[in-house]
Image (cartoon, rainbow, N blue to C red):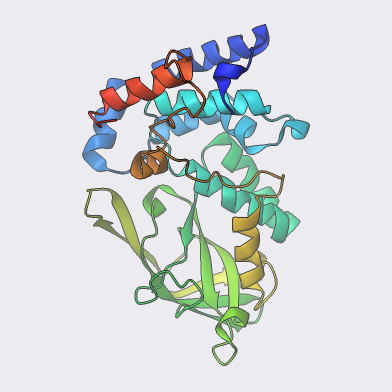
Length: 294
């Protein structure tokens, strides 16, 4: 959506002003300095403040369910980026939570969703096998049924934000004799379970991610998301749609890939020939502030 072609209502103008003021209060110089030092792209104080103020719930829900309208969602995205808000991992939490709503039990949804919207429950992804590369279906992490529980053993690479999360959305292999796309089962594993170990590593650009190890981790069957050996359909559902008709945003031309992933740089406007619209000014300002040549 190009806001240079949208006449904002008084209510939407007030929403934008309020959000801008709120972010100026919580995304402080200390927050930004800490984020640069840690490379975590996350700040719990900011995240909890967004939850208390209702912004996480507004972004999570569709408009028909009381969430942001399309215009307010665009205002939200722009202002979050312009404030350099360290909140990269909220998109992962929201995607997983929608998937749990769609495929998980009502009991699991009730356990997780209120905390997600309040900000004190965060979710991360346990997809990548150490030797599996980008092929998620190449899964060596095993889950074996034991009565009403499952015993999980294995490891995952690039479990970003695991050290700030309460659950990991974990791909496991529950039938090693089956074809790889028919052997997967998904679990939402509590990260405080016995046998879970989180080891921090750094990417080449200094960002924090993790290796996670699972040693005889026992989880109840209620933490299973989707059918046994039906994990591929759950994974596809998570990527295809988030349960309310919104799809993950795709990168746009002229947009810095890393800055987009971190959520700190708005896209170059495509329909602003004069260069004087507010969105264009925000784009140039963000480029200048990050010393990132346009």
